[in-house]
Length: 307
Image (cartoon, rainbow, N blue to C red):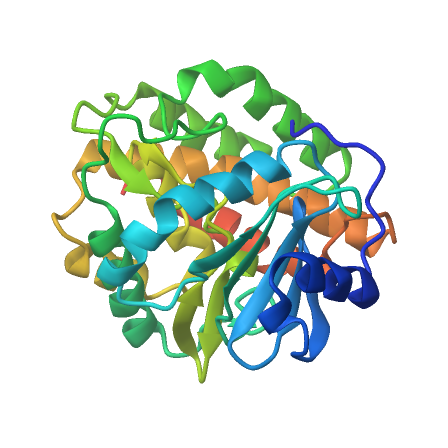
C-alpha cells in the first residue's frame, strides 16, 4: 500500500506564488481546481495547461519526476492526448516538494461519463495500447507491485476477496476465486518488458461524446507484462466491446495473456469496489463513481470463466 502522511493544504494562492517564484510567465493565467487524486492535486492553468502537485502520499514526488523524465519521449507516438510535462517545479521553502506544469487534457473521466459508443471506443483503446506497448529501454522504471507474475499477490487477493465478501459487495465470491485461480495458473509473460500505463482505471481515462478522448496520470508508468494494462478492458468497455478490442489490438494477445489480464482485472475491480463503498459511507478518499464499472467488470469476469 502507498505510504501516506498528513495531506498538504494547497490553494490557488499558493500555486500562484510558486509560479511567480519559478515560472513567472505562467503566473497570470486563471487557476481552478480540477481534481484531488491519490497522489496529486490537479489544477487547471489557463486553457491549455495544468499544475500537478503532490499532497497526500510520500511517493508522489518520485512519480512526478518519472513522468517528467519519460513521458515527453513517449507522447508523440500515442494516438490520444496525454498530459505532457512542460515545466518542472522544484522544492522550495514555500512548498518543499516537486511539482509539474503539464498540458491540459480535456474530457470527462470514464467513471463519471462511461463509454456509450462501444465499438468505436474499443478501436480507440486498442490503438492507444498498441502504440504504448512497445519494448521499453534498459533503465525503464519497474512497476509498484504490478506488471509481473500474479502468484506473489495471492495474499493480497485473499484479503481483498474477504473484505468485499464481508461488506456484502459481491454475490459470487467462488466465481471470483475461480477467475483468479485460472489466471495464476496461466504461463507467465516471457516476452520483452513493454511500456505500460499501469493504472488504467476509469478515472484515468477520459471520454467525450461516448468514446475515449484522452488518458491521464502516468505516475505508474513502467515496463512489464501487458496483461496489467489489458485488464482495463473489463472496466472501461461495455459488455459487447471486448472482442472488438482484442481483434484490433496488435499483436493479438495470446490466451495466456488474456487469462492473466482477468486476474489483474479481478484485483483492480475488488479494490475499486472497496473505494466506492468507502465513498458510499462518506469516508475520506472514497469514490462512489468507481462502483458501477467495477461491479459490471466482476459480473463479466465471472461469466467469462471457461470461455
